[in-house]
Image 1 (cartoon, helix red, strand yellow):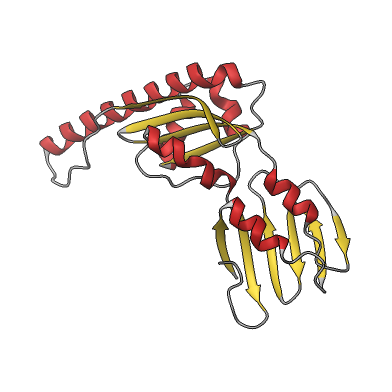
Image 2 (spheres, helix red, strand yellow; image 1 turned 45 degrees about the vertical axis):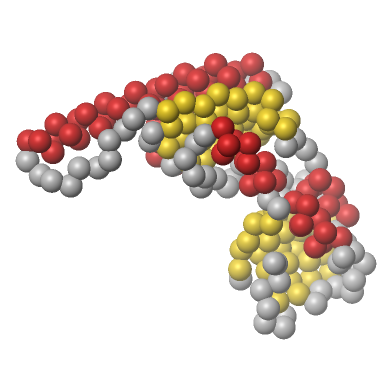
Length: 214
């Protein structure tokens, strides 16, 4: 079993060619299992509500789910910076980014190491508190409309930022299952995020020994 994420445009092209082929399709639990020349389990980022069983390769409900746009709130945090944004489909409609210096880990021991550690913890605390405050300011106006949230960067830093404010709990509740391992949070990172947001998860097992998803 090989798991890959494919951009939704390429995913749609790849799947559309399978429509009507001999095989079987099972829609359940937010995924489509397609059995034909190869076996594919396809899971769109934002879910797949359709359920059913078909005695052929039937991808229309899957293509519909992949093509759908959503309003998504995003919070990306790493020690050193953060990026907050709102996407309508693939369009970034609100955003704010920021950075704060956080020292790298100190490898030496002794009292100087302790002072270094305390200073680093203070810097990290200031960073996540600022990220939480900015997230609340930018995202709260969109709270009623946002269907999903996307979290990314460093998981511990994101959790620390969310923990600074109760009014950010909804982001965790609406978060997509995939945590986005993005590079340094910057505006350019946000602008490129829709590719990852809408990338489709393929679990492929080829009956002929190939990997399937490419």
